[in-house]
Image 1 (tube, rainbow, N blue to C red):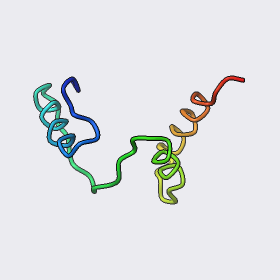
Image 2 (cartoon, rainbow, N blue to C red):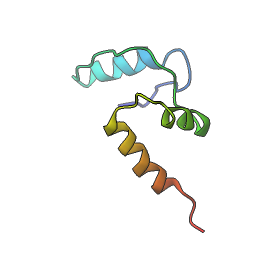
Image 3 (cartoon, one colour):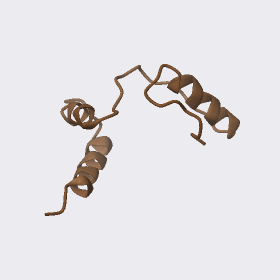
Length: 70
């Protein structure tokens, strides 16, 4: 579905919405927010005070999976 989306460009939103529509999926836009493209963005997201509990739990699970094996 996301083949051809030019990530980290100004075209991402338009291309993603087009891909969703082409697949027959509906969507709604929420408030505009910042991108999470790299580790520093992920750290910023994790530090959000008003992050929904579901999102916080999912991030915690992913963080465990991403830890390097020693």
